[in-house]
Image (cartoon, rainbow, N blue to C red; front, top):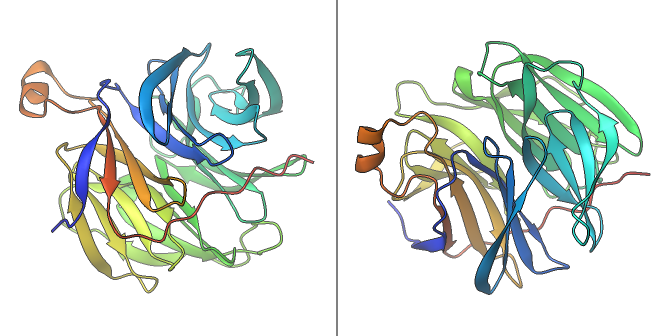
Length: 293
């Protein structure tokens, strides 16, 4: 059941919309169409959407400062200059493997980024989860098929993530000072025979996890102890990722995709790929800037 007021944030139909993030300093939302190599941006208050063409696949971004974003791409982490549109390599990540690309990422409260990769054709076990912090890069989990649902508690003591193919969201304790795992992942929520599976997530200030259910057409909300406490139904079957935004982060933007749909399926799901706004009571929060040095 949904208590949210749902509206269209951008009606451009993304092939694979992903990676929404809010830049509070610029009061803008950024998101991506991974397969079409595009980055979108729009003001918190609305107005025209700007579409930027990129030279390679990118899936997510983090704030560096008011001029630059850190883009997760198919060859690694790049700084993107918003004024000039130029990319500068920060760290190569699987750049020597043309079969993989970036997917889900998020910045831990310490400033560390968890950077997820996957096979471009979602090959089993091709992906990994990497930790990037102050010039260091380390693989922290491997043998992942489709990495998603990366999110962190506000105090930095725990993280969530999923391999969408396994249909289980996991939670793992983390070091609040640097975002590294300090224990083994445990099952947070298992989907069983429910329709769809876990895609991108974001965590609010109350410790609840908001997860886009790919194939299930909704945003599910989970309590800190792993119980589903709400579901907000969307007018598309394949939502991909949520993010909080607004002058204070009390609104939510959600990307979606028409990837894998034939013409008949798209006719049944005509808003597939649309980016939505959810107005609902929520205590959201912004991700911190990435710590590069």
